Length: 241
Image (cartoon, rainbow, N blue to C red):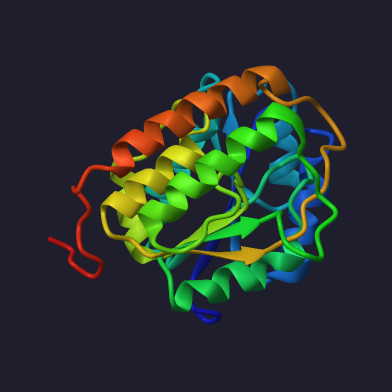
């Protein structure tokens, strides 16, 4: 996978203060990859700054959220014939030093999720939000028949089969780009694995939802995944029909 065409997709909403550094770090670690910044209806200079840093920019006329922005990125990747797409946050939370691991993992999987929860990690999530994430992890891991310890991680890669699927079917609701997309992929028989990554806390800007709202949504999503996980509508792996 290392020699295949790779696209680094960066959804960005009002990230003019961090986008340049993110782009430069991506170029440092994967100079062979192309970079697409999806400007998600920003009201600041995100698009202008990203262009100046050397990225290709797709500007959406209004804010549609991460799911809608990533749907744009998958459509672009499909039409341009990329073999791998990696989602990287525009706020500097994701470490581009992990790009090799995420891309190389596609040799044996359709989707590789970067997990924050591993022995060397210092990342911590506590309280109700963590409890909901644990329940969600157990439900998705059962569906997947292998562990997904960090289902809400947006630092992940997608291979050709996932690109084709998500260019057509990609959820745009809150956390659809993480939890929802994994559920869709697993039901369609795609192979989902994970790899340890480093994540930092946001340095600039603010998250789109607060912690309490996120915890409540994660709880609801967990119940939905548990319910749908009991259904026997999975497509056998390797069957593209």
